[in-house]
Amino acid sequence: MKLSGGVEWGLHCCLSLSQASAPVPAARLAELHGVSPTYLAKQLQALARAGLVRSTQGKVGGYELTRGPEAISLLDVVRAIDGEAPAFRCTEIRQRGPLAAPQSACVRPCAIARAMLAAEEAWRAALADVSIADLAQDVQGDTDGTAMPRLQAWLTATR
Amino acid sequence: MKLSGGVEWGLHCCLSLSQASAPVPAARLAELHGVSPTYLAKQLQALARAGLVRSTQGKVGGYELTRGPEAISLLDVVRAIDGEAPAFRCTEIRQRGPLAAPQSACVRPCAIARAMLAAEEAWRAALADVSIADLAQDVQGDTDGTAMPRLQAWLTATR
DNA sequence: GACTCACTACTCGGATACCTTCTGTCCGAGTTACTAAGG
DNA sequence: CCTTAGTAACTCGGACAGAAGGTATCCGAGTAGTGAGTC
Image (cartoon, rainbow over all chains, first blue to last red; front, top):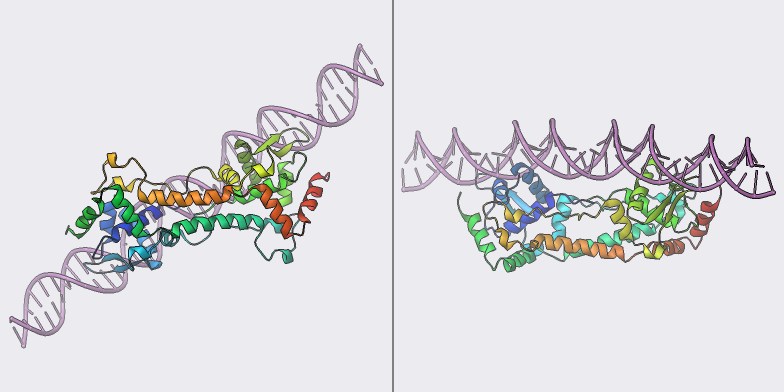
């Protein structure tokens, strides 16, 4: 199982955007994080499609959050970039082979699928429980409160 | 995020093997589940490498569980087939770009990685909490107790 | 009749192609701020 | 001095190649049962 690498970028971008007071261009976010500008643009488009960020065109355009960082969960970002398909997909093996179960007995998912999907639900619940604002607070604690002010200063500084 | 399709096959195989009293050849398991024999063999090799099943060669050889089904969790099977690498891999973005954090301040994982790995831990805990024996009992409940006896009969029947 | 040996058929195991998905990139469409000219 | 039209630069957005991992397959190595032959 592998989570798309773009998820990490998207989370960092949301965290950075939560400290901005004006739209930030994708290229500037890429410079800040030291990643490929063009590929990061792709991830930001996914975030925009999911309604997490709003894009503004034109000379002073860029990306900005559509709502407060406390209203955006990690799950929102993960689903926006990685997709909403479950990691485990039941192919209904129980209905195949010589001992195939009749279709009438398969109204509910099979026991294996139920257990796997329950575990995924626990994962999603843990992600939904953490917001971008929580992340910002954790980073503040890790850096003795120096990271966010520096970030705000860099974002507002004219290139 | 996508879980390897072989995980589902591996789980069904472990469930079937829990009802067998003698080694079952890979080809017979493939026939039972209606899947590709050669590819299933690959998954079974992974289970053997992880020590979940034991392989016996020769004319009446095949695969069998190394321990009771109550001592094998879903997590064991998932890790054996899908690997032990975490789905989220932190690339230390915080150490890159113009606002890179000094390496001395990065003794513990960054806040994003901590949250993501905590969610994965919840997922793993949910998987570790369910055993193959639990699955067998659930299937019994779903089928009014008819599935497992039929499975045992089919497995012991000489081809 | 019992033992030994060679054989055969069956098993697993790792090395080998194919294909879907993720990764990374490019150029075009659209919008905004700015500038300069005219009233 | 104000208005207005034009321009230019900057932005995003979707369409286009390359690479990696998962999927599927094949053939060779090894082992246990089986049968014939021999003592």
